[in-house]
Length: 269
Image (cartoon, rainbow, N blue to C red):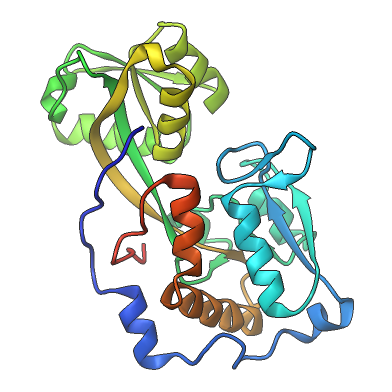
């Protein structure tokens, strides 16, 4: 199992919000959701452990449990709309859903077209390889071949890492995470750059590879995706995040699926 400690960053979200925010529910649930009688949330149920289907084809995962907790606090039933990573933003902009809870990291590019709640979690991005592979620093990647899914935050961070450190490494970009994981599992590449959850999954499914964490590249804040202009809903969700970070419910979900606690401080961007 890959585990690591996230470095402390910026000021504490929990402390900052506790000083100025009221409990979730002080802001009214938006009238459109109350009148409809349900909240509609986009979730990627093909991206474990965030979203997946269990043996009975029921949605489960950290995103699903987070959405269920949110709906419960709103006092309305939850309707899940399955999405892929690529259509999370379009489903929101086209008003097919009220919000997106789908391993949604905050990026500068996305913030140009959508809004975000206060972050409620993090998506660590790491490099893993077998225990026998001597990698302790970026310089050790010189001459190595690394697998990564094209366009992911792992791709962004890996590209930045090798460029900033002047490392001559061969980055092999696959079109999706499933293909990337298969390439590592079958020995096409021996080093993987991915989100921690993906690295954990590959390690667990392929114990013979003896994979372990080598470098933690970054930790992206994870938040609820919202439409620009939905200020009333954003106010409610921001207060909900503050309350459920403070009472530990969001941390309980995170620990269940990622086998470690949330960092004491969560970066805003």
